[in-house]
Length: 412
Image (spheres, rainbow, N blue to C red):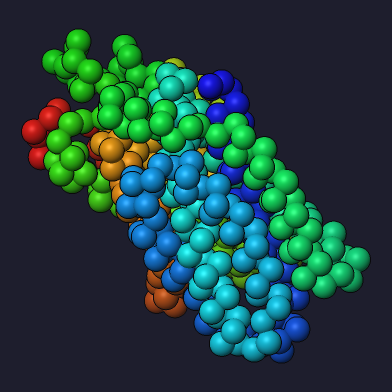
């Protein structure tokens, strides 16, 4: 079994995951127009997708642990591609909501399965690689948005757009299935435990732990219940990160346009800077994790996100706002992949359930965070409300040692 092929396989899954979501996002206006939905009705339909994703994430954890990540992720990506077409065929709002609920559930299942698979491949490679997988997801998102935009520009409806992507998913899924990590190997990995790649000798090791495998950041810790206790806290760290992502997506451009009086065109650069910086940060994240160790990387990343955004807001100028959101994206890029990796390595026999908890809380942050910021903005103004992601990023930086596992039998 070629480890390089296994890495390509899981990277393809991340690429398709991003492409499917990017394509759907780009064609939401067309679906809304075809059904003549109001903004409120569309919000209800999109809420069904979010609910389905959270349910799918939680339900898939046990499936992945029982049947293996490869066994779950290949059917999930095929189903994700097929269910993408459903919303474009819906005849009314209730049917749209049901189709989005199913689409979201499978999308959430794929999220968990492919992240577990990435952690398993990383464990075999004995070098960090999960950050690059998340970078490939970002590339897929850009590609999907581009595909959707091209079809929209050509006045082609959403159904042909989605069918084209479904075909692409089917072809690449066959390739991914042929090169995916065999189930027997993933079971052997779970049974053997294993550590986080690139941690040997890193400064992240706790004092007094020299020579102990448990001291390396991200190492699997025996004793399933004990090892799983800290997973909820790891999920809260991802929750904090995705509040920042949701804030950049929903409020970055609004802040520049309404609070700083920039042009509509320039305001769009807020989220563009955030997205590009996040993708660039993830591309170099594996090398930084190998050099610094996950605890130090998360500590520095959280500080960069917090200070960068806060400084951009304090200057109170459009260019500074763009730079601030760019630094927020660069900082946040280094956090979530390391937290996913740590969660999946806490107890490899229950990696699916661990990553399901982390992913579910993260997605909740992405959905709830912008709502909380909007409500807070009504009370203290948007510039001050956007300080919330900066404060949360600082909290993540302070909590970075949580990525260091406890020795067996230690609560936490």
